[in-house]
Amino acid sequence: MKRAFSGLCGVATLLAAAGCGDGSATPDNGANGAEPAIAVADSDRSGPSERRSCQIGGGAPEPCVVTPLFGDGSFELSGERETVRLLIEGDEAQVFAVFSPEHRVPTGGTFRRDPADPACWTDEDPEREPGRICVR
Image 1 (tube, one colour):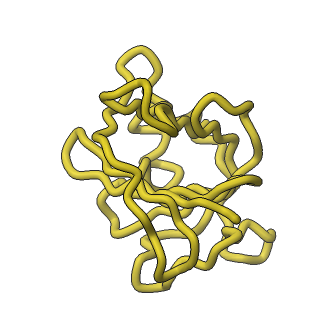
Image 2 (tube, helix red, strand yellow; image 1 turned 135 degrees about the horizontal axis):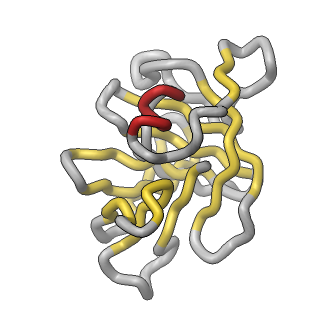
């Protein structure tokens, strides 16, 4: 079963401006197959999905699809093993495991951007999973 959370960065320009990557994302309107494993409602989506490299928790980096949400920097990350949604408000993010477009479960904790690696968000409690989420 896949897990999903939402929230990190927005479209490619926001990703680059926010230090979430080098801006080399591959924007996609669906024609290049960059669609998340779990569908994102059109009402949640604020831009096209992009292929990126992501790391959730202590796992190895893997290909993923990042979909910007709500126009506020929030995003949904759909990796090979799980899907997460980061909902961002100010400098904090709440993370949700995504099981379907309508079924999301909060993981608990508050995530903040890592000042040493702005492509990553880290949980205030390093023992709680997933602990760290990075998008490059």
